Image (cartoon, rainbow, N blue to C red; front, side, top):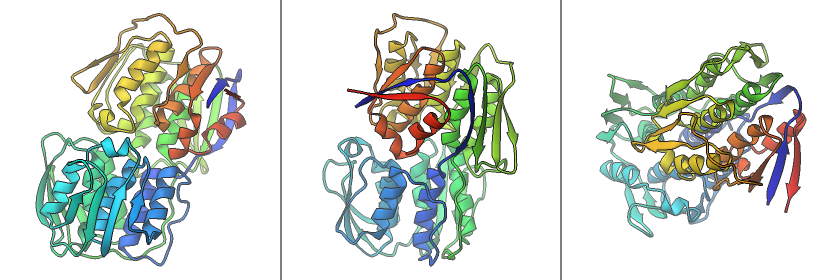
Length: 409
């Protein structure tokens, strides 16, 4: 399946963003560990969160989390401290995504985990039991989801957890998000130094909890505002003081001519008429924003050098390779270097006639490329249903804002 997306002349819209997937999935795990009598409110209606809810309520021996990487990592740790024996598996792509670092760390804490297939990869056979906890060390450059998975089970470990992160710590905002949510549920968890996190063996409390809207989803509306000739967009449910690291998008898009005015309802996006001539930024703390900025800058003709992208290679797809391949179809010649940098100095290549943008089973590829139709007559996206992973109503919201979306065979 593929769709052809065409843009309106101007954009004036009020959009109810989806709830934060990052907060929803963490709140569900923490709430389950708290054996909570409350269900978190305003949960994300996306694939990853629906998979998490289903898994937490499942009595089956085999849990299939499909393509949900967050669920795979968080549930691997959760099942390690939860009674019963389970096998956790996923899609073919999920079975190619490494999980050895997390498994090794859990085993150091006493977990009973075996590989049910290829060594170092899902599926996993997990026999849950009480774990001692204690001191462990991880490289700070590993996925923050590994770190968050360990942190969230720490309050139920007999000796808590002292986690030392060595070298460069990437995605620190996601770690801080996890710690803040843990504290909301009564945990004693904090940075003791720049690279040491300590979590006391104090069980969670069951508390009511409401999930805020998703700043990652907001990034595509910032992108549309930047690319449009005229636009004013109100994003409902966003707040100035957010737990989410991706709220950095408001500051970053100032350079691309979009200002944010916070209201009682959310955030109002307006064009400023001023734009940078070049953009250089290290996305090590906000990797999920990278696709938005790479595509936006290319479409606006703004040269860039974006570093800190190493984690993009192990996402739903190799996002660096995917961006290079699909932007080449639109005539932009990007370069990858150091396994962590994407850059563009204005180089152009031949535009592919009737190009179809592949999404590689990656929701962010679809959402980041669709707004390009504001700068070209239209854009064709394959497998558009992938947006259900984090933003199921994305295409409907685009229609609400005046975009035309036609299904093609």
